Image (cartoon, rainbow, N blue to C red; front, top):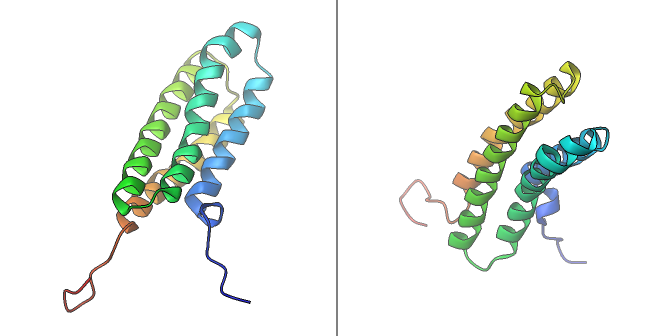
Length: 129
């Protein structure tokens, strides 16, 4: 058997994005209709978009395209933070939920930046690619 290549599903940044999306989904399910229809749908879309863009970038044929989609994922992460701030200010999140989501976002944010910086050829010590 040949060596199995790693897919985007094996990336820690993707796994964290999934965790955030799933956690937000579970939280929003417990909200009232107005909160679901406004903040809920927006935060679910933005959170799910993080992982979707990581996956789409990994499936593109060039490093440049992959980097572009990871930048979009980073924007979706910031949008998710915005909607979570709104949810917090509107007392839609318990202190435990706020703490758990903050921990995940604080872990994902630097990993997403590191992943972006890792995409593409790297230079060797003698300057070759």
